[in-house]
Amino acid sequence: MVTSGNNYKDKVSQLISWGHWFSFFNIIAAMLLGTRYIVYSEWPETILGQLYLGLSWVGHFGFLVFGFYILILFPASFLIPSQRLMRLFAVLVGTIGLTALLLDTHAYESLDLHLSPLVWDLLLSGEKTDLNARWQYLFITVPVIFLMQLILSEWLWRKLRKLTRKHVGVPIATVFGFCFLSSHLIYIWADAHLYRPVTVQRSNFPLSYPMTAKTFMEKHGLLDRQEYTKRLDAQGVEESEQIRYPMEKLTFNDQGTGQNVLLIVVDGLRGDMVNAETMPYLTAFAQQNLNFSNHYSASNENSGSLFGLFYGLPGGYINSIRSTGNTPVMLDTLSKRGYEFGLFSGNAFATPLYEEAIFHGKKLPKSNENSTKGSSDKLAIADWKAWLSEQTSDTPWFSYIELATVENFEEGGEYIPQFTPSLGNTSINTNSVDTNQLLKNSYRNAAYHTDELLIDIFEQLVASDSLKNTVVIVTANHGTEFNETGTNSWGANSNYSQYQLKVPLVISWPGTVPAVTERATSHLDIVPTLMESLLNTTTPITAYSSGISLFEQNPKRRWVLAGDSRDIVVLQKNTTTVVDKYGNYRVYDQNYKLKDEGKPKLSTLMQVMHELKRFYQPQ
Image (tube, rainbow, N blue to C red):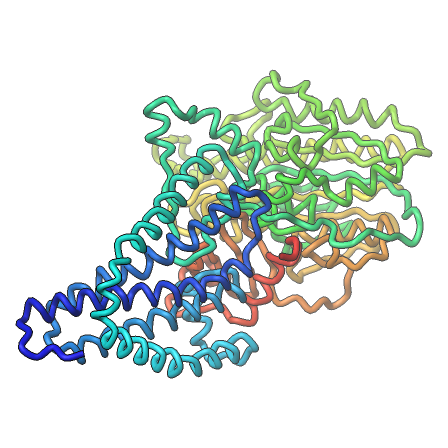
């Protein structure tokens, strides 16, 4: 195309017109690459979900590419006077953009993450893995993309006058604008109504941030926030995928050992409280049975930890389980074997997951809801003792007791304090005592009192002649921190240090020899242990759990998995790696101090990501 004699204004006008067409064809190229996200994402089952997918696919990539044009190429059209230089600059920008999009599709396919600091660090780490090898092969396409951009640039410049005469710019822009606006309006409605076929697509495409308007709708009376929150909590499936649990039909050698099972969970009890001074009875009991001294909860909060304990799965699957209503395979098997169930809680089963999933369909007693502070555990144990006295020797039973005194230590209780601040021979002045020490002493008093409650439970087992035929498991949902990490962290659900994740695990299993296991174990291991050694399943553990049997000899375990639906936590010998759902990561040392140069290994993360996706329905 000849442009001799054109002034600056004409040159800029031509470059802007050319840039529009250049962006349009790059939108088409981006959409074609974007089909890879559709292939590797869950296909929506409803017409509205499919309509949203199509509209967002066109609208999002149209907005994404045109946005880069407005931010980069449009102002450059005024700053770069030479059309050849400007077109070369645009070709480079287009090549970089499409290459980045290609790499992002690769990361999404392999790790279910979009490009982020974590993904870049992993893929540029130099670690020899199949993923890195395939990643490097992708760079072979860069010269091809660059050549195609050059050809497109030259062809558009030569055909610019003819293309301009077609006057199709406004209709094309209208189509992209309609798709973009429509997709966001549909998402606003879907978000307010928790319509999963649409909301599950929230993060399918890179840099996707669909609009929500809950505050606006609430202000104008179109949304009841309390009702919305209630439905969201009850549903828990806003972004959950369909799960296969178990992955195959369970098979068994026989009807199992027929032994009873008593599972005791002490809410908020951290592992280091099991010592001769604070909990002397449980300490002695651990010495006489199986003590797993390096045991970790599945999460640092109630729902995730209980989910891992009963399902043997990481917390990332919790919403999928809640959406399907699947009960734990272990409890299902016990029910089919004719086990009687006795469920008791000093906290009135306050965690919603009990009713929503774990004990769904079973009647949960609430008789101790109105009890005085500190007495609810005693009432729960009294109810359990009455229930146990009614059981017959020829019918096996499963019993669950939740003790809440330790977790509610700040409320006080009906027990005599055993631990007070040490001030030598001076009188106690609480104003001069470290608040941290006061809290920790209150916590230890609650643990000491719980230890006495455990005596009552075990004495009843002995008196009823049940202990010799009962598998007894004593553990906790999560630990409790008193700012030991120096991060202003108190209680639980604030970080993933050993103070919040490390909990006791003591098992009395008839016929076993007392032993201390120092290797890292997890809540995820309890279900496989009971399924194999109590119920005698022949189905591989990988079909129903992410854990391993506690009785497995010399297991090849490089890491322990924890976390919830927000964070992935990888516990290794000297490090704790926390990865959020956006791919941002932090690596801590054994004292939970941030490591500036710490990076997770790609091979480890690939194994973890595989485990977190393994139970989902194939696309």
